[in-house]
Length: 168
Image (cartoon, rainbow, N blue to C red; front, side):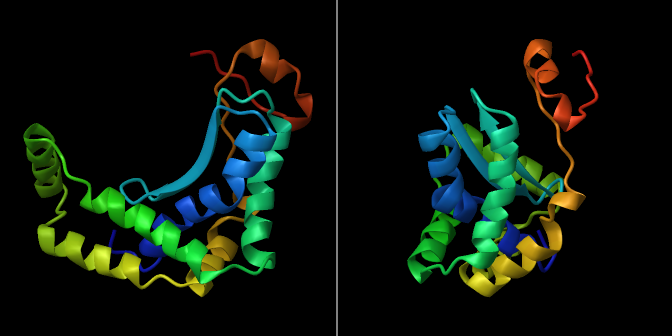
């Protein structure tokens, strides 16, 4: 949460989902859902889809979303929507029990109200240049790890991915 790139990475998830992934993977590809997101707790940025009839093509769409980020012109409105998406998650009201659980885990992990306010402020300051910078730095296809949860028959149909199969 305190890392300088945490806020741009947090905004990058909904920016890619709203601007590219939803259309390419859900609307055109037929998946039930798809997206991207950053977890400040784990420090991981992930792409995902579910109930997806495609595999190789979806993985290619993840890479294409980064190229779209880097190469295409974007309007401020797209960035603003992604920022508002993150802010609405931060400001979302919770049930009394949910507030207690969040306060407990926040206290346990040092997420004080002041620290969360600073992070919220940093979210509001994210720019398109920030998104491109963290995209170029963290999201190169060569640095990616791939994990697929599926049935063995589907995975066996994609030997080009050279995936190591683990039975859960």
